[in-house]
Length: 248
Image (cartoon, rainbow, N blue to C red):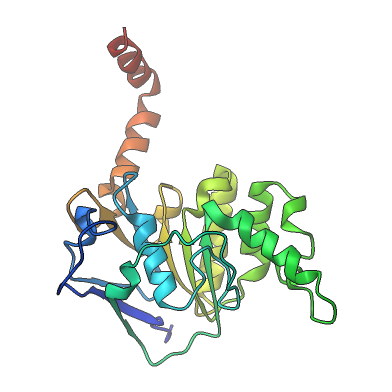
């Protein structure tokens, strides 16, 4: 249990923040410092509050490709990432990760295409072997995500995941909790943006809830994701009846 993480905290340089995106997102200019749990840190919140933007900026700051992949991926399909990373300062421990990956769900197709392209070059070891050996394009979206989790992540690394549940069934999300725990036991540190109440249940993780104006640390049962899902699952018919009645 000696492992204490690779990333310790993140600070926003408050001086001379420019106007426009992403600093027109209120909560992205309102925080000063966020500490990371040595094992698992979650960011959650409504659409549009800046979760993916913050996760992307963290990944780019650390040297990952903005579209995802390991640090050896340097392709560009489009130059769409923000300049938020230029205004961040990240404190690190003395420990050096030996592995790392940035999963960005919306551009994972591009990562799969890049792997196929690179593997066409003769002589070099096949990259796809690190993902289970089968082209990610020859699998369903969910299967390709699962191949990544089960084969590419080896531990002793930093794994930044943006909405990894987007392609996974509830059953696979539960199985992912087990995989995360196995990797934590191998000195992995996870930073995850998610809407999944299943993933958020990982024990002892830190959960940051991003609202329109601020970022606050919350307990699992206090998170909006948990409360909304629980309210619905406890009384689905009542909520459906209320929705349909309000629409008439």
